[in-house]
Amino acid sequence: MKVIIAGLGDVGTQLAKDLSAKRRFELILIDRDEERCEDLSQEYDALVLQGDGTEPELLESGGAREADALIATTGSDALNMMISTLGKKFAIPNVVAKLTKTSLRTTALELGVDHVISPKLSAAAEVLSLLQGYNVLDFSLLVQGGVKMIEISPEPLTGNTLKKIDLPQGILITAILRKGKAIIPQGETKLKAADILILLAENEKKKNQVKSLFGELKIGPRAQAIKES
Image (tube, rainbow, N blue to C red):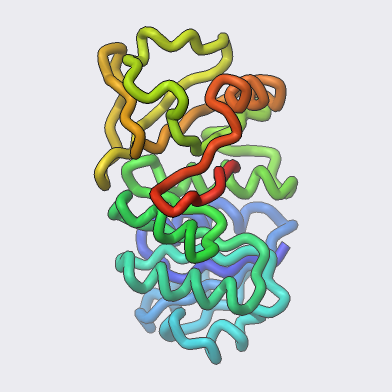
């Protein structure tokens, strides 16, 4: 599996370290910092390119047209959005963007980005769990044992407090994205229509129960379809 990582800060470097330990991955690493690129080229068995991931020529030289996944993890939300958009133009099937502002999640998904990760939601671990869905990883901090992560709108349960929701065993609401912030849910937390719920379901059967409970709904004001890992 060919994976491009654009942006080698803390998240990108950790992800490169994790994936490089697996022989099944062909890594292409991109960063502006020449010294960092030089160091990483010595440390990992990967093609390391020094430059701007927003440049189509650089992505193409890194094999974007044959890539299976592109993960934009620079320190800039704007750059990650641009890189992700380019990735979709290259028809890369799995494009992931790291966004610090959770309010940008819906916009990114509407632009065609397949998944959005956030440092507030433990980004490096979340990427690994997303890649698990591509049937290429047998490990993840979030998906050990086949756990599924789901993003979904709270309707038709808007207005209810969490303690009033009869969640089946094996399903956990881990976070609520609200007005650009990630909050840890409590029993008294009341669901709002614009919320995005992040849930974990321990297996495929439990994931289907989540859909049954919340319905086949849409995310965001412009009806972004449900995204799942």
